[in-house]
Image (cartoon, rainbow, N blue to C red; front, side, top):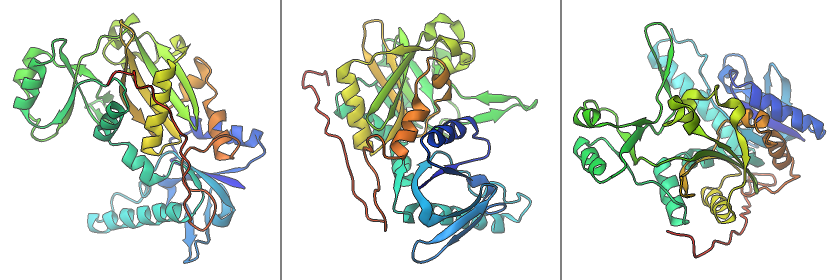
Length: 349
């Protein structure tokens, strides 16, 4: 029994924490840094699903893999960029197909399967499913139509914010990272939406905040933490702007049972064993769902307030805890297991 940890070289803390938790349970792990393939890692596959990985961690026979933790992928990243683009692009694509094909052919439990993660990442799908399950969601449009944005903003009495579906950063002339955060859209910006036709954005009604939550779900275990993002002016629209300053202020939070059941129902609808949810708690006590990240970060929560997330991941990967959904057994035969979730009909739609 060996757990395959699929990640990238720059991703250090979380994989190390889960590897330690696995070792504490007497289960070895093998770290596969996908950015090292194909330049520094060798992979052999055959038509029977056999083969091996060979790299900095040594040699691992694919038949010895009992489960996979899929966390990050950067396959082909280290293929020289000086290579002719006509050659580099197919080299990257072939490398990805080999790695993703290996994962698809393993026939073991995966937390979570690549196809599942990719589907679950779609924000419009998340919002539609969350709303249908009774979760409170903000009014939202995703568009490249400036007039539609202005009409939407006029209908939102509390104002609107804008955000991106994907997480990315741009770098200024000094090489400083500039992250795109959630930002209120004021009247002058509404008049000047130049460039929207080149890059659609997400626009949501602005929700008053008492607290912000990160709800981490592993299997059937729901762990919630809260932060008073309104304590610092720079964090009021997006707590990540002051993430380091707020680090030690995260506290345990008890999620209301109806919301917890809805969270588990959304996990089941998306087919996820792991999810990092973001919520707003309003001054009136509404719990407003924003999004779920199927591969979201969690390490700061293992320190403040001390959530046992790495241990919970190790338990699910080793079969010591409930595997809510995924491939089980061998030979690529898929059996699904979804926990029954009873929803209260009195929850507002």
